[in-house]
Length: 421
Image 1 (cartoon, rainbow, N blue to C red):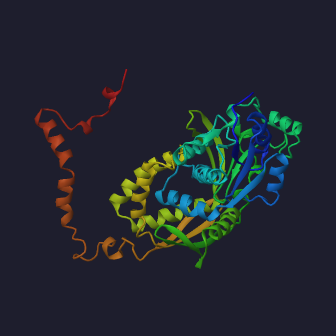
Image 2 (image 1 turned 90 degrees about the vertical axis):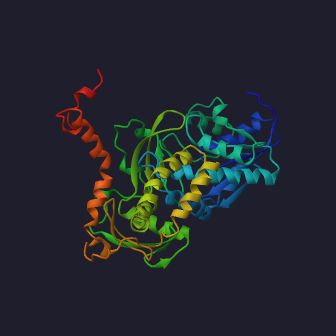
Image 3 (image 1 turned 120 degrees about the vertical axis):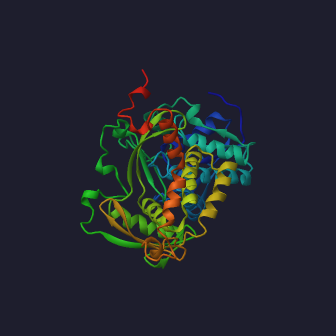
């Protein structure tokens, strides 16, 4: 169908089926516009060396490739991990964190190239379209966003393959590849195929980063992770860059079957979807970070931070990385991480991450306080007054009931009168 003309479009390009087809589609439907492809190297464990040749063969004028792995980990993964953000109890937000960074760089490339539009290959059913477009709106609302999946007549992967063949687009995707995947250095997600029925067990051949826990080594592997102000900086005593630390830890944890999650989640657009995620290093680091916080963070800060974590996860999942609320929550989280420095020892064993030790120069745990020994540290007689004050509301309520001729409500044999008809 005919569309109004744009001069130059920067396309978020993976080299997969959808984005490969989008290149000629944009040119055919937007007045022969110039298409520049942009690819973010987020550690997706793919050979990107031939990507420019493929993009040009598909009709693009050139490809801009950026290595964003370190920035992704330092500015997106670690802040989210420090916030303790987990979506709907299980999802560690691997895709959700990556999209705002990709979209941010997409905007920067568009501005540098003088483009008047950007485009993405997200479908009209998923969350990624929201994440891309909200980022563009926040950073440069003057850029037009083109979302082919919401416009074209292609409705299936088979249609896309046929379109690619018609326009001589080189593709690696075939009808036999039933899974839709997203990969980066933090995680690998799987959707589609047999996973569309939540009763079906995932096929073992589907997994790529983790071995089956049943086939993992029969002996645990002990590792140590060092943190500085909430950021992991060393593995087994060796200081590493974020990329190297994740690369090594992914291999270690994956070998022990760690990081698999089978989730039915609520998408932002209103439907439920099932995804299977592999997050080996991320799972280990989240557990280690929690363990270190347990000895370094006071009770009241931890309670409030747990509430913040849920809201933070929702913002990230919903594509609102670039919003004032997330920035404000980030400022809070940064303060909470000032003393999260120390070492955590963990055992990796058949899909389990077992904390076996934690230490920190800022630890709030004191053996002399917890052992109930010295009276000058903790006087047990003080507990009487504390309990009287802490339980005062309960006592007053019970006294009022008794003085009114009744009894404490908690002595009633059942609560049937509270049930609705």
